[in-house]
Image 1 (cartoon, rainbow, N blue to C red):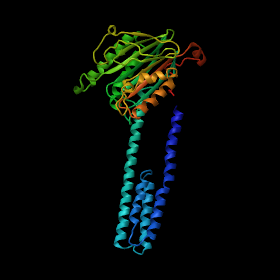
Image 2 (cartoon, rainbow, N blue to C red):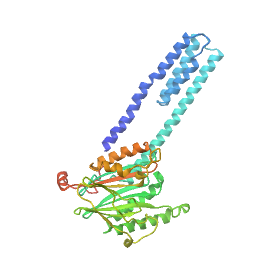
Image 3 (tube, rainbow, N blue to C red):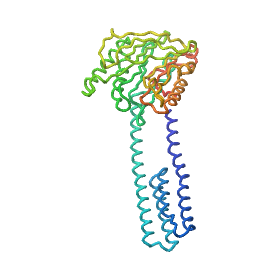
Image 4 (cartoon, rainbow, N blue to C red):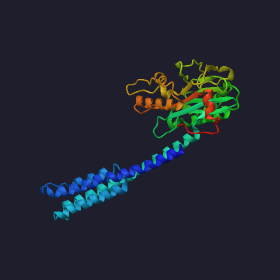
Length: 390
């Protein structure tokens, strides 16, 4: 994945340069045409002032150096026109040359400011990407009998991570996975996301049961909110979470929902079903003990796919205000592998919303492989062997 990204970065640098050099012919030809035509039209028609169009056009695709060069050529062309007609040092021509030079300088200044803002934006995006890889670790492609694929789509252009989160870890005899959604979106929600992810990664190995894990996460969120929740938002900060435990040798999944929507179960034989869960309140609303959480057990046979998601998916709207028909669309691809399934949903969701999300959205697809496939793929990759999902 790193090699692919590196190659894309190189292409992203080279192509704009080649494109700008090719487009440079437009203002150059424009300067030549205006200069020649101005000498052919009647003497009472002056086309020289139109030369300012050349640096203005150049600024749309080139940097300050090329824009300055075109501005210099345009100013030189204006001087040549005045020399050609023998009025180079007349007051009118001198004012036109001075005005063209000043306008060209202002356009170059605009290019300098624009490039500085672009560098700042690139730095912000670089920090956001570093935060994504530091907090929202890419899930392993395989854990035990599971094939895993994940997808994150941030609502804010400058952010690659926000209020949605997921994590997975290997425990003795199985796998535990969490998907969650903290209140808020984009960069403002990173603090709560970091807390919940860190608490899960630390506690998932130490607690034998899911209720104990849920109670520990509730305590972590409550402590965080007590220390950092703004007084104006008291009682309004919370996080939903779905805790999933998948044993290696038992074809079931155990789940606890803390105010989070239930997953979709895709089966090649029976289509799509939505497990009926007994949700507890979201984390941070009401502190609960382990005995107050209900474990829901759902059959999860080889060949099935469990699709976890956040409400940014089901609450996405099209320009007409209609919600994304998530269950209907997902059922169409119930025989797809986890990577292909998320690829289909991503394209379909962006097409539905016009490529603009109002909230962060995250999905995790868990596919239990058949025994023959597990032997074919060889060793199990544990959580220490993180890889990137295609």
